[in-house]
Image (cartoon, rainbow, N blue to C red; front, side, top):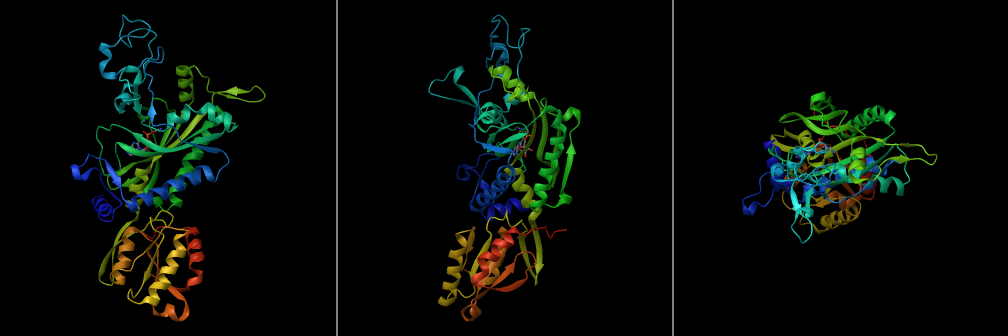
Length: 428
Ligand code: GAP
């Protein structure tokens, strides 16, 4: 993990937040390559979840969660001040002491960051930064299912920041207090829940494998009954063998009808599916939930490699080309040669219209290659003296180090095709 952290910092993927003020514990900012890589992860997830499917729509809900702590009287209390509070139904009693009280889990409450909404600072303006994006999906269930005219099975996907006042954050980005979740709630007829639960475990596992994460570093682990959250009837984690051991990368939970039932009870709005023919039921929910941070760390760990090439050591990130922050580098072999640089520059201008590419003309060619290896750039196109004679460039492969010549006119389509090819890690 130390090597990953140091590479991330050296090459501007990620650095500690507020560093000039001494840093804010376990909070990180993303630099250029980190942002690019996160964007690729996000867009691949959205592509698999929304773009390539007919049965999932997207949503983007607010980050503050109004938390209702008593499901009966709908009053909110601070979990650590219950002894000073009055029950909404029976003011002579404390919350939780009256027979009709139905308090939500205090653990979740303590984990949440409290804030005030609006100018007045009183109890009614208290809000909490959401600890998961899921609730924003459940409370919009009625809107979305009606507007999108969907019948279960269908899903709602959301990407956004979540906040947890983690007691023991650490291990770089693995456990942080502010992270970006990608969650999808898949609403299904109750008798199909088990089938969809298995389906989503397999889909999500394959998503990682198809993005180059080695299968030998992934496993599915089903939770024991005493490990499961109160809302879940079954949960499996897709675990990755991080440097700190097997740890949860993504969770897939069968949440049953818990959330829609709870929100129906608390809000008074019926959250159920009603069909044209009068058919009605409360859907069950299958939820794949992951954070970009956990994927980011897993993919970097999986890609990191060191090797000796021609007596020189190189550090290389063997990232799937679709995840690599930069897709290709364009390098003029002799930066002083105007003919070569202008051909390289033209190629660069053409490629940058379609992909994130870099132009680099500083330093020896070997050093320029190594700089690209270190950030995981899969291909480098080099213009040299021969380019001026026959309008070809070399393409160098990050993993095999093989070089071949290509007509400049074919480079853009060659790169498009190369990005579409299946890729598997050459690491054992
Ligand atoms: N809606 C269900 C839910 O939030 P969770 O297992 O608490 O379930 C889901 O979180 C995923 O969010 C985890 O599998 C992990 O990928 C990510 N995650 C949770 N807490 C995190 C943290 N403190 N830092 C980074 N990622 C986190």
